[in-house]
Image (cartoon, rainbow, N blue to C red; front, side, top):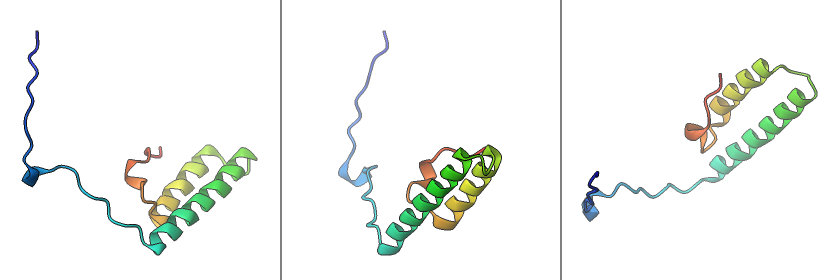
Length: 77
């Protein structure tokens, strides 16, 4: 049977960081990204662009608008 051990973490070694506050520019970039993606999805749903074009433009939108959660968004292939 495997034995579990509990390790105490000192306050000086905290792994939790406080997120930085979003600025008005950050919020505007989030909104702009959301709007661009919504238009892009509508274009794909109406067969105006292919899935490949959708993925390429999505990658460009992430670079341009730098959405806050871009680091954890799935990779575009």
